[in-house]
Structures are given as C-alpha cells and as structure tokens.
Image (tube, rainbow, N blue to C red; front, top):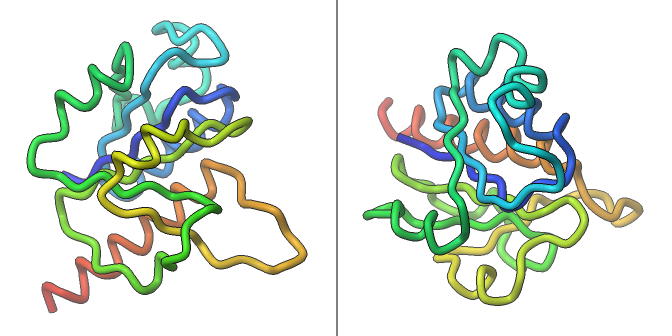
Amino acid sequence: MLRLVLYQPDIPQNVGAAIRAAACFDAAIEVIEPCGFPLDAKALRRVAMDYGEVAAPKSHASWAAFRATIGAGRVVLLTTAAEQSIWDFAFQRDDIVLLGRESAGVPEDVHNAADARLRIPISARARSLNVATAGAIALAEVTRQLTLAQA
C-alpha cells in the first residue's frame, strides 16, 4: 500500500490535511516524531476530523523506528532541493512518499537515505508549496501513474 509519511511536522492543521489526502487516495498516513505539537489521540481526532477513521495515522517514535518499517518500499522524498521532477519519475505501488518539516525539511542523513529525491515544479516566483498540498499532489500523481499502468 502507498504510504504518505510526515517527518516531524510543525503544524497540526497540515497533518489534518495530509490525513484527508491520504484517505481520498487510499494511502496509509504516518508521522515520524517528535512533532512541533502534542501528537496524542485527542489532537489527532481534532485535526483529522472524520477522515482519521478512513486513514488512521500511525506514529513512529523516531526516524530509526520508521526505518525499521520500510521493508521493500522505496523512500521517495519530496524536496525543493531535488533536481528530478515528480513528473519524470516512475512510481511503484509500495513507494513511501516522505515529506519534511514545514520549517526545515529533513536533515542531511534523512535526505541521503532516500531512494529518490523529487521536486514538484512550481513558478519561479514561488518558494515552495504547503507540505500537505505537496503530499496531495504526489498522491494524485502516484494514483494517476498506477491507474495508467493497469489499463
């Protein structure tokens, strides 16, 4: 199953939006802690609304704890520092789409551990997309590619 993973998110509303996107695209949603806010059941229910029932978030205590769950999946990091476009990448069903912190992205060791680093091309006048929006775009592209591959 496709997985959308948020690395130490800073903003609870973005987690809620990512949960909603994951639910809409039948993806699993995961959070690597620590977060910039308390990640407890009450907080997750508040930001996820009723989408948390469709895509219940799973949390990992650390990057190392998350790494232990990867299995055969490829870690695909969305980053403004990447050269390869998301449109030029062939996604696979068990890929793990990783999004960095809103404030700082991911540290160098996480960046280097990714199997692929991709960017979403945007206007030169803009700095970056909202992290939840980027996740939704990635899930839509993965879904599009996998649907075409089945046709």
